[in-house]
Length: 388
Image 1 (cartoon, rainbow, N blue to C red):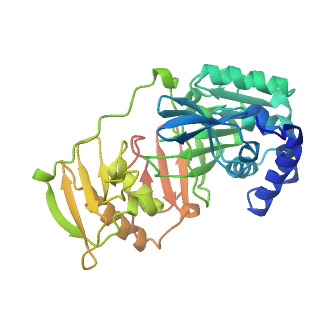
Image 2 (cartoon, helix red, strand yellow; image 1 turned 30 degrees about the vertical axis):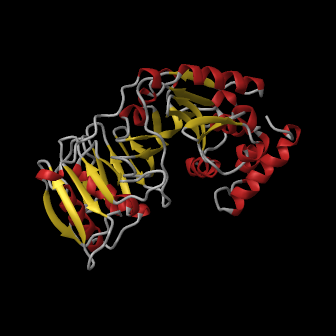
Image 3 (cartoon, rainbow, N blue to C red; image 1 turned 90 degrees about the vertical axis):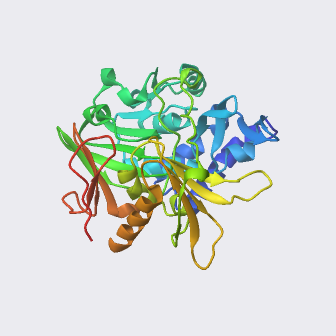
């Protein structure tokens, strides 16, 4: 660790003040927690990818900055990260905890979030689960050194912690394609579940659900986009790799043009979210030709059924060239969704909501009984409807 460790309280309170100015921190109880919990003891170092490899860094100023930090790696991949503090405090305030509340965190990571919760609620009210046993052990050790003793468990976060339920609040610092019913079931009626819902890469955001009955939870998405690493059901060392990349065979492609921005999946995230309801799970997108010293030349989409689309970034007379292959025309789905989004009044995140029951999950616009509603891919439910 670099010089100035003894001066960490000044760094911590500077971070709190930065978050206040950024509008990410308003409650005095959480400001006190940020000032009191020594983040550098829970995140003593982090990784920076430089020159084709991970480098270990321990800069105190960066540890106490509003920055995402990579804290555990496996080969060239990422096992765990420390969430941007501004997102941490924004979520904790949205959680709306009160004295005596029992809180379950899905995704222990470094233990920093658990430390903030312990400061606010007391050890006996804080529970956390993570799929990585070594990270749980390390977080437990570091938290204990600070005098915090929450209940930390290694296991599949999708299962929650039934042996310690019910909880007043569940907060998940990971992304899920659908809300595990176990989380709702382990939350008392009137309690809250806060998680990042992602139907595909970048397709979705934070949603805050209230359990309003024995078999029902619902609520709205957060106005500001946020993203977390996907929830894993087994440790990174034993997890399977990504599926094989779909081959984009231009020799047998269907060719046409479009006037829709080829970067719509990357830039218009609400449109991309809506498009995944028809595209289905397992969608991926990226850029062709993107290299260290080269700009990308096209945007691409792929689906597990072998469908693919590639759209050039270079514009000619207001249009872009499209190549598509496989059983479905993916770009046509994105085009149709974009027009539907316009017809709906270009809704932003806060207009979307989610209803969760035991056997189906439905996204809706403005109100749970709205005409415009879409079942989450893979969760059952009625055929999607959308009318302007």
